[in-house]
Length: 172
Image (cartoon, rainbow, N blue to C red):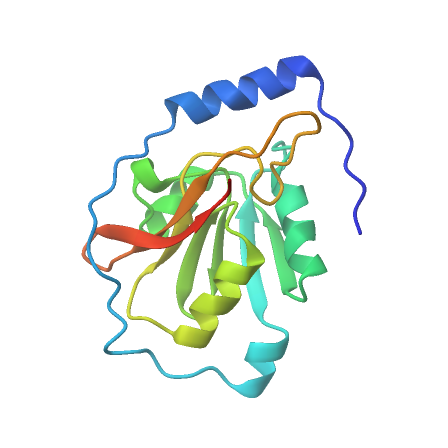
C-alpha cells in the first residue's frame, strides 16, 4: 500500500481550478460491443503491459503509475518532452485530455482511469478507440487529496468516429 503525502492547500486549490475549467461535454452513443475485438492472450489478461506517456514535471502521473503497478499491471513508464504530440498521434481530442496518456491492448487510456476499468476494457474488448477520464477529478486514482472528499466522475468510451459515451460512473 502506498502512503500518500497530503498536498499543500495551494496545490489542492490549483487542482480544483483545473477541474472547474476542464471540458466535460460529451455526446452519448452506445458502446459498440456487438463486434468485439479479438480476445487477449492469457498472459496479457493476467499481467497486462501498459505504456504510460507522461510529463516529467507532473506530480500526479507517477501516482497513477503506482496505482496501476499496485493492481498488477506491467508499466512501461515513458517520460515525454511533448505530450501534445503524443495526444495528437494517439488521436486524443482536447476535450477528452488529461495529464497522461497510455496504450494497452490496442486501446488508448487517457487520464486517471481506475485499473478496474482498464481490466474491464481488456476483458470485454469493445470496438472503441479507448477510454478517457477528462480533466483531473479529485478522488480518481492518483488524484486523492487528504482532507478533500472524492467527487463523482465518469469514464468515457471513445468511439473511433470521435463520439463518446459513458463507460463507467464512479463516486458518491
